[in-house]
Every structure is written in structure tokens, then in C-alpha cells.
Length: 346
Image (cartoon, rainbow, N blue to C red; front, side):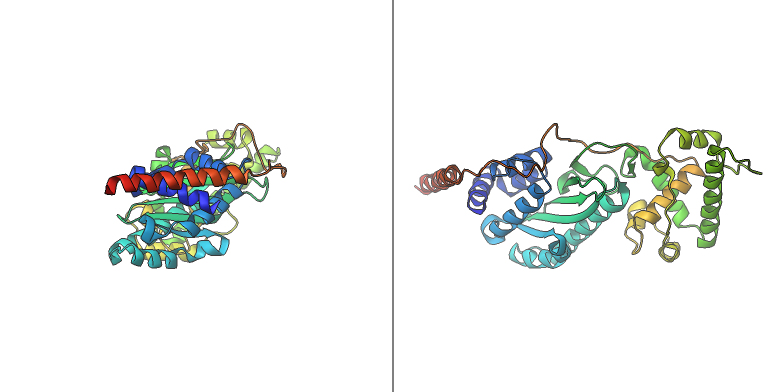
């Protein structure tokens, strides 16, 4: 896999340049095709982690003009130090290196907190060019259904980190996904910022009111009588009856300490709000529900998955790898490049 990956990327960089190479990596379908070419003939979570690991081992920044940071599990936590190391090899400025670190952190925060689809990130790889352009490939795992989901980013295509920043998301389509990156969630995001700038005591009081209201709706569903229906409009009660309870399930723990920090900092926009330490999925969800159920600013509940597999899976019985053909392909690509370089020099 390493030999063939080296030959493939040597060809791609020669033909399309470094920016063209990361554009291809940011394409979910192209990346899946690459994994099949490198001997993955069945679709599983390993196509992401192994292929990115192979690319990190063979793509030398000084040879290709591209560096790879991060990886699976513990390696993902070394992303920032990896960026420092490859930034030095690629001769990137200190300012550019800090921008790359920010892009790494915010892309992980967005996919972990703003898209609440039940997938916990465990893999994060960042591909950086000598010009400072980047692509991010990260993957999450759902411990319940044991499926994986992959998220692709490309720097040149990101206009806003908090609004539809992805090149594509690969996974199985599901119901009731809170997607705060959707354009439809713009009003909810704006109200969330207003809430974050509200005195924490007032915010906590509103949240407790919401908890009481949701308990009232549950009692209505079970036929119990209540003294008050609070301020939630009837259509929301009907939605709770007709849709899965998971949509309006309130987080058990909200980080009120982080919200006190947010109040002190007074974030000007949603991206600044996300960057506050301690603002995680539960707090993001809590404020989104307050924005919808109390102030009427609905977020999107549509799954942003763009690509799903029609067939395939981790069946445990892959076809044997044809190493002979892989070696022949590697030799053909390498020889073609060598001859092409000789012709240019001649």
C-alpha cells in the first residue's frame, strides 16, 4: 500500500500540483476510490484510518510539498505538534501555522458539537500544502449501531466555519440530526449568540422553565392533567407527540461555568461562541433548544449526509490482495514519471 500510494501521489502532484492533490483528497468519492485502489475492496471504518495512516507515512513534505498531521486516536491529539513540525519543513510563516492550528481545532469542534448525529470523532487528519492550503478528513463512530461517518473539508471552499463548510459527509442517512451548520439554522445560531451574552442566572432560569414545560408535555402525552401549559406553543407539543423524543431530549448537564465565561467575553458571532473553552455538544444543544422552543428560532433537523453507500460493509471476508498487480502498477507509474522527467530535462 505504501509503495503504490507513493507512486500515485507522485503522479498526482506532477500532473495537478499540490493544490490539486488536496482537492482530490477532500472529495469523499475520490478518497473512497483511492482506498479501493490501495487494496480496500470492502467498505469499513478502516478505509479512512488506514489510508490516512499510509499517506502520512509516505508523503514527505520536503519531497511532495504536502504534509500530513494527526491521525487516529492518540495520533489525532498530536495534530498541533505535527503542524509545527511540517510547518517548519514547508517553510510556512508563524502566522500561517497558527491559522492552520485554528482550522484544525474549529473543524473538529464543528463536527463534534454543531452536527449532533450520534457520531463521536476519533480520527482527524489534516493535509497541508507548501502554499498553506489545507484539507481535513475526520471520522466519527456511533457506538450504538457501530457505523462510521466521514467528514471532508477543503480550505478554499470554506466561506464560514459555522455554515455549510463541508465538501461532503459520507455515512448512512438517519432521522432527527441537529445540524447547526445548515443555512436554515441561521436564526437559531444568532439567537444562541444572544443567549450566550445574557446574564447566566437569567439563562439558567429560562432553561429550568423549559425543563418544566417539557415535563408538562410528557404528562400531557401520558394523559396526566396539569395546572399550566407554560409558554410553549401547541405546535411544539404536537411535534413532540409525532416525532421521536430524541429531538427534544434536554441535555442532563449544561456547562454553566463555560456560559459564565461566554457572558464575560460577549462573543460577537457563533464562531466566537464555539471557540470558548468548555462549550461542547450539550451546551450547544441546550441553547439551540431554548432558541427554538422559547423564541421560535428553529434549527435544521435534517441529516447533512451527502453520500451513502448502496452496498458493502465490514463482512470480514475480503478478497485476497493481488500484490503482484499492485507491484506492477507501482512500477509502471514510477517508470512513467522517471521517463517524463528525463524528457523534460532533455
